[in-house]
Image 1 (tube, one colour):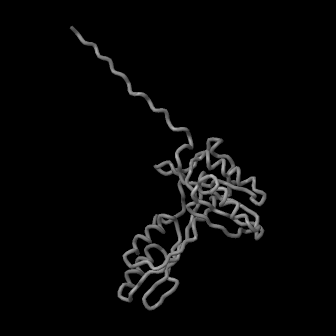
Image 2 (cartoon, helix red, strand yellow; image 1 turned 45 degrees about the vertical axis):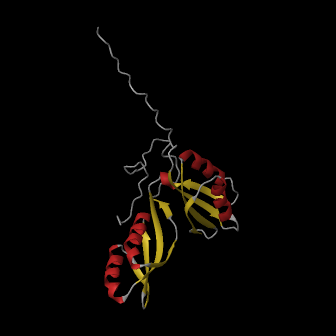
Image 3 (cartoon, one colour; image 1 turned 180 degrees about the horizontal axis):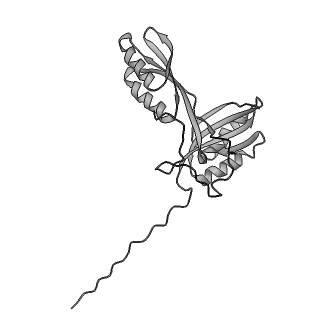
Length: 210
C-alpha cells in the first residue's frame, strides 16, 4: 500500500507596513524667538509618549528665529503626525524630518579627566587621533573638547574611561541638510533615493570615521 505525502508551504508572513519599525529621527524646527516655544515643542513629544534622545537649540542666521534640533526614536507614521502637530503651534515656522535627507550632523563635548603628568603624553596622543583639543590644564586634570559624529564622541568616551572621567557635558546633535536643495521637497514621494546604510538608515555624510 503506497502512502502519498504532500508538502505544505509554511505560511508567508506579510512584510511590515512601511514606516512601522521604530528608527532614529532628527527633526529640525525653525521657531520664533519667543518665551515658551521650547516648552511647547518638548511638551508635544512628551504628551505623545516620545522620549527625546537629544535636544539642541540656538539662534539662526536670522536673530528673530531659532532652530531646535530634536533626536527621537519612533516610527515614521507617528513622527509625521507629531511633525504636523508642531507646525500648528503659532510660534513654529517650519518643522522638517531631516533624517530623510542627506545631512551633516555634529555633536560637541567637553570632558574633564584625571590626568597625572606621567600619563599626559598618551592622553595627548589619543586626543590628536580623535582630532580634539585640550582646552584647560590643571595640576592633575585635563579638559578636552571633541566634536563630530555621535559614534566618534562615544568612542572617545570609551577610550578615556580608564583615566577616570570627572565631568562631562554635551551639546546634543545639530544638523543641516547638504547642498542647496530645498529641505523637505518631497523627494521620497517622487521616488527620489535617499542615501542609506546597510541597516536601512539614512546615511549621514561628511564625518571623520572616528
